[in-house]
Image 1 (cartoon, rainbow over the protein chains, first blue to last red):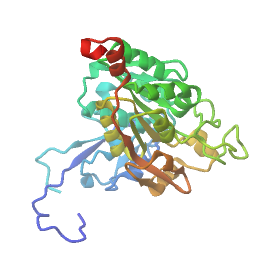
Image 2: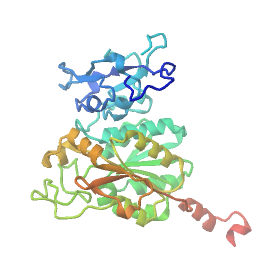
Image 3: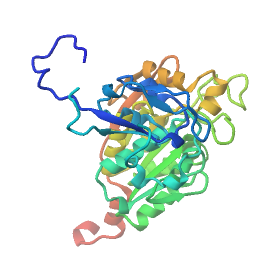
Amino acid sequence: MKFWRVPLDSEEILVSKGIVYIIDDRCKGCGYCIEYCPRDVLEMSSRFNSKGYHPPSVKQPDLCVNCHYCEAICPDFAIYSLEAPANAPAA
Amino acid sequence: MTISPSKHPLDPILRTERIPHIWCPGCGIGTAFSSCLIALQSSGIDLDKTAVVSGIGCSGRGAGYVKLDSYHTTHGRAIPFATGMKLANPDLNVIVFSGDGDLFAIGGNHFLHAARRNMDLTVICVNNFNYGMTGGQAAATTPNLAKTTTTTRGNPESPFNLPLLAYASGATYIARWTMLHTRDLTQSISEAIQRRGFSFIEVLAPCPTGYGRRNKQKPIEALKIFQERSVVKNGANPGEVLLDFKLGITLGKFIDSERPTFTESYDKICRPQTAADSA
């Protein structure tokens, strides 16, 4: 993580980590999740879903901090994130 | 990574067999609807005593996608149906989710009178600046000079200022957000559901097929305008709030006041329980 001035307790703060799940067949390819992901985790994929849209795919899975913004902004209930298991390596 | 191990968090209150919904790619109604569902889920209210009422139009389809008691009513009459439900069963939480055409054009009068009576309803109005479902005609909220199928040289009319209209009619909670401000919107809806009185929340949403296509506004560009031009002014005077793609868009919670709801006044005056009440 980039800091303007490193906080004294930055080592102790646990950054939450998430895993993004995409329900391909609900996606209509609007790209809102890709555009507005604060950590730039997603990208447009070249594959098609059953309706002929390009769903997003996960470009940088390690960057997801489980903020749920993609889940909130998706108009099609097609993407969500869940807390990564605790035994995953710290971010 | 694309195969989900569990379901979408909103699936329990979504009629998943009807998803994907009818809303176009890039339409903001889905996001407004999803914020509404997140608010319903997180506010902790009894969902068995919650009803969602919609009118006609794109946003009017909302009631058909929510797995709660829901009611898809005749055009413009969402608020009268909701009023009836609330009066028949005052324990219900009644949420009206509909569009600007339904609530303010054909149903305009019903809105005014429900606000005047201070009915205990939560009205969420998705404003997409045109009649989207019928092909993008000019509506009561279409900005001046905007192009639509019925105003090909630009709209000569001025739009309604919905927060001011609600304020003048007597609504006791008035907020406006865009579908991009999902967190604030969710919080606002959650607040509105849990309070008494007539709550009105306007949600600005892009309509890429009807409005955006004729006004050179791609869905992402519309969101960029919402992001760059909007100013949050909580407590702003509803008479001074702006809604102009060039000058700026005022968002926020404008009014949060208290006055007796219709049910309370009715019970006090027409169904007195004690001698003190009837005096």
